[in-house]
Length: 187
Image 1: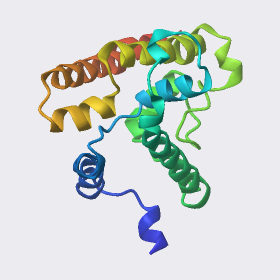
Image 2 (image 1 turned 45 degrees about the vertical axis):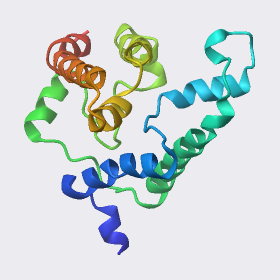
Image 3 (image 1 turned 135 degrees about the vertical axis):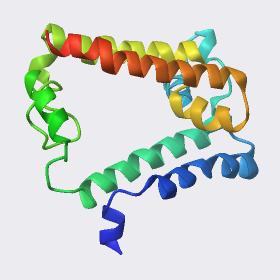
C-alpha cells in the first residue's frame, strides 16, 4: 500500500479529490476554499495593530489556519516519509535547454542551481526570488485571491471574476514561461 501512495497520482484521482474539497467545505461549514487569505488571518492574530485591513474577527476564520497547517503538515510528512530518493525525471530536450542556462542539478524539486543563498545576491536570483515573490503576493492581493481560490473554488461557483482571474493566471504563466523566464535565465 505504501508503494502505491509513494507513486505520483494520476490526474483522474488527484483532481477529483481536490475538487471534492469545494462541496465538502460548503456543506460542512459554508466555507470557501483558498490559501492566500490565511496570511491575513495570521497577521490579524499576531499583530493587532490599528491597521483597518487587519481589524476584523479573525477567530471566525481559525478553521482556515488549521486547514493550511494541515497542508503544511501533510507536505512535511510526504517529504520525510514518502519522497522518492531518485533525481527528478526531466525530459531530455528540456534538460538540454536548461543546461544552456546553467541548470544541471535535478536532485530536488527546486533547481538548486538558481534557487540558493548565493544566487539570491545576483541579478538573476534577485529577479526570480525577490521580485517574483513580490509579484506573486501583489497579484494575489490585486486579484482578490490565489490560483487555488479562484480556479478551484471560484470557477466551481460560476463566478465571473474567478474566470477572468484564472484566464489571466494562465496567460501570464504562458508569457512568463515562454518569453520572460528564458531572458532572466540567460542573465
